[in-house]
Length: 185
Image (tube, rainbow, N blue to C red; front, side):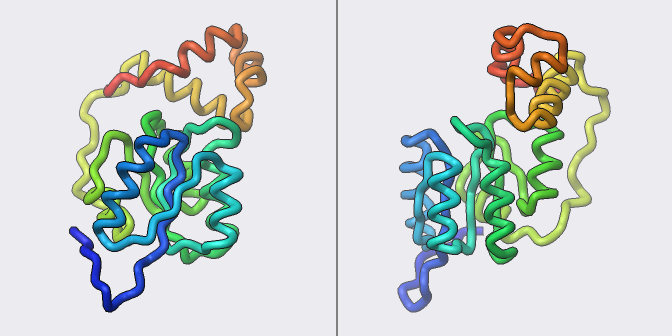
């Protein structure tokens, strides 16, 4: 689906929330060419303040940022009104964060890297996709560990020290494991 700018129509407001400045600039340019009026925020507090002023029709929210996570932004957008169609975009996908993002009001969850057309298509998806393939093999031990660590971190509100205590693990070890990308299986 390729939305092109039509000067006879108002541009829909879109809020991009990501701490990666370069990524935001590139994404903003691509979305602007497709007819969106793009605003950028680089952390949760800035995003919530802009959302309160703007009441955007669309939002793209990264999960992993300094300070409060993108889940706080998703919740704030939902609390402001259910008219914002929010897509969560992350390089650190996990089942736990995907479920929480949807529960908090996101309409879709995409993993980086992705392209602009996939993001726009996600904004317009109203239902799940029954043709999505189901893995025939169980998750690997490494993937299961990564998922579990992220679930415990989420349960601890993003507090690494509390999660490390709950896991009986040194905080630095947990931080090192969290920085790793998950295995694909």
